[in-house]
Length: 119
Image (cartoon, rainbow, N blue to C red; front, side, top):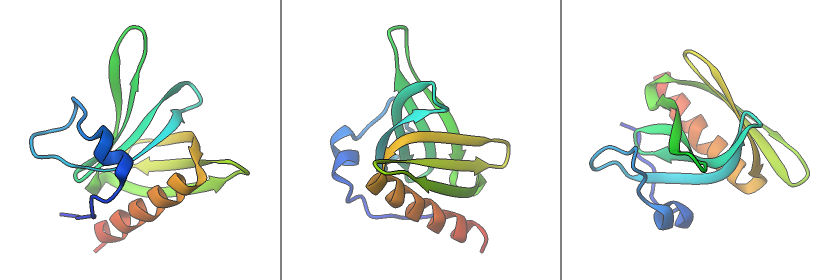
C-alpha cells in the first residue's frame, strides 16, 4: 500500500467526503474543472483518486482510479493555472484550471504512485 504524509492543510480541513470508505484518509485536494465542464475538487485519498463536484441537483463524483490502475500523469503549465491529464487503464481524464503549485504537487504524488505500481 502506498503511504503519503497527511500534511496538506486543505485536505485536512475538507477532510471527509461521503464517497470515502471507512478509515480512508484524504491525502491531497485541489480545485479544478473536469473536462472543461464542471467545477469541483480533485481528491486523492490513501486508496483512490476521484473528482468531487456538486450542482443544484446533486452531489456526485467522477471516479478516476484506485492506485494500481493509475497508468500515467501529465502536467501542462500555463501562466496561472495548469492542466493535469490522468490516464487509467480504461480512459484519460483531464482536470483543468488547477493552481500551478497544486498541479505540481499532484504530479509529484501521482508519479510516485505510478513508479510504485511498476515495481
